[in-house]
Image (cartoon, rainbow, N blue to C red):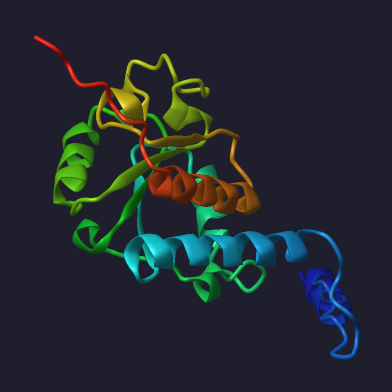
Length: 189
């Protein structure tokens, strides 16, 4: 016991050193994130006149996708600076991010969440399990993919998808929402 105590007292911290204030930002993902975020903010403001509000729903996942979704709010990604906000209530949401295969216990809850979300609303299935091809796809405890319970507008694949892929997916969703639908031919009787 004494050895463990002494070892912990003299051990160095196991953290990453903070960047120097005068150091330039590292190239790569930060520049890509900034570009994607600004494009997403422009499209959201054009579509809604305000920011996008997201409600995340765990329909029975392993929490890998939730960790990546929560990373969107950390100091590295900080998507709130681009106008992406998370809501606790589906009544305030524009987008439902659904993770995991839908379990029998979450089936009704997901339907109610979808019904409580005001129109216009979009559903994004996040991760391989939500798309119906994950490790829990054929489990006795699941109904199946999110698509079997509520209509899905976009699928973001990955196990789990990276936060930058989530931002790219949201940008693609806004592009689809702002695109004008093709003119339907008039039916003749």
